[in-house]
Image (cartoon, rainbow, N blue to C red; front, side, top):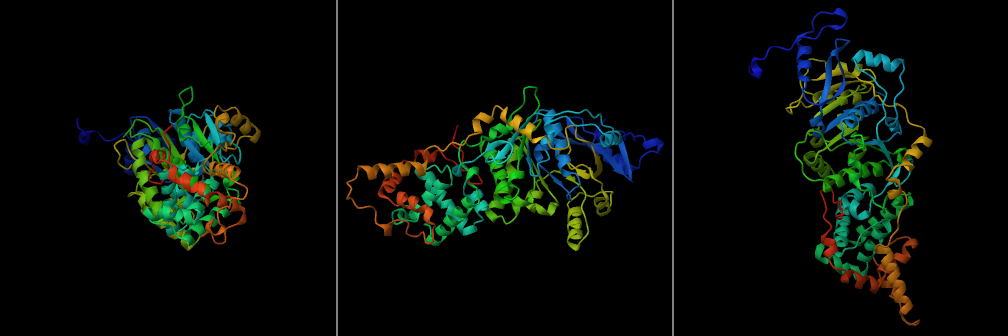
Length: 535
C-alpha cells in the first residue's frame, strides 16, 4: 500500500469522554507522529482543552536545522530551554546555554516535585522523574561563578572586535588592515596591549611605509581606534582577552554515562556589558565553525547552541557583521551544530537569518501598544497557514504554553500546534552559589583555565628588546627623536608613552621586518575574521 493509499489516522479519544476530535486536530496529530528519536515538548491545545493523546515533538536529527524560541518576558522561555536541553543531554547531545539572568544553573540538580509540577505532568501525560544533568559552568573572563573563558585578540578577529568597540564601517576596515599586517608578520596579538602596540607602530613614521602595500591607514582613523581601545580597557574589559584561551571543543564533551554535557555560561556579572557578551557568544560559535569538519546530515547534532538575548547581537551591527552571521548560520548546520536564537519577537532577528530557522517555539506576545500590535501581526505572518486564529492564540497563551512548528523527519514544516509544554525534570531555580563554586572547582577543566597567563607576546618581547638595546648602548647615545615617536597619535593618553617608546624605536622596526611570514601563513581566518592556530 502506498503512502497515498494509507488509511486515515485513528482519532485519539477525546478528553473525559468527549466526542471524536475534529479533522484539523487529526491532521496536526499526524504531522507530529514521528517514528525516529525525538524530543517531547508537550500536548496539543485545542479549543481551550489540553489533549494529552496528541503529543508535540521535534525529531532529533532536525535539531541542527536551527530554531527560534521567542516570547514576552515571563512567558516561560527559559524553562523551554531547560526542557529541550535536558532531553538533548539525555540523548547524548552536548548543549551550550548562555545564562543571562542566572536562573539556568538548576539544570545540574534534580527538580523538586510540587503541586504545580504534578498538575502539569498530569495534563500533558508526562512521566515526571526528578533528574539532574552533567554540567560545566563558565564565566567570561572569570567574572562570576564559573571556569574563566578568555580569547586572544588574534583569534577574536577584527569584525567581532569592531562590534564591541562600536567602530563604524571605515574603522572596522582599518582594524582589519591592522590584523592583516600582524598576521603577515607573525605578530600574535594576545591581549589588548599587544594590539595597542601594533597600532601605535603602524601610525608612526617608521610604520607607515609598512601599510602602503595593503591600503594604508589614516592617522585620524587610527586615533579613533586607539581611543576606543583605551576606553574599552578603562571599562574593565581586559580580563576577557588573554590566555589560556578557551578551547571551544570543550563544548562537545559527553559525560561518562553517555549523556551530553550541558555547558552553562554564567553571565549575570556582565549583564551591563551586552555588546561584549553577545559578541563573545558569536566568537564561540564562529570558532566552532572554523574548527569543526564537515559531516553533512547526522542522526543527532554534535552540539545545540542556545543564543539567549539574541537581539543584542543584531543591534547596531554592521553589514559585514550581519552578513557573517547569516553565512555562519547557513553553513554550520553541515558541521552538525544547531543554533537556537532566543529573544522576544521574531522581528528581533534579521529576515535572512530568520528564514534559516526551521524550528519555532513562540510563547505569548503582548499587544498593549500600537508597536506591540504591529509586532504581533508580523509574527503571525511568519507562521505557515494554520487552523488557529494566531493573533488571538498568541495573546491568550499562559505561562509554559507556546505555538510550535518544527521540521518533520522529511524536512517539511509540521502543522502549527498550540502546545502546553512539559515541566523540566531538573531544578527550576538557581543552585546555591556555594554549591556552584564547589562544582566549578571540582571540574577537571578548572586547573586548565582558572589562572590567567601573561606570557611573552608582542608587547613584552618588544619592551625586553628595547631595554636590552638601551643597556648595551653608550650612555650618551641619543634616543629616537620624540618627533618620530607616536606621530599620528594626536590626543593619546600619557599611559601609552612606554608603548610609543617601544614601537617607535628602531628595534621594533628591525624586528617587524625580520619576522618571517611562515607563522602568519599558519593563521587562517574564517567568515568572521576569527583565527585559530592548529593545536
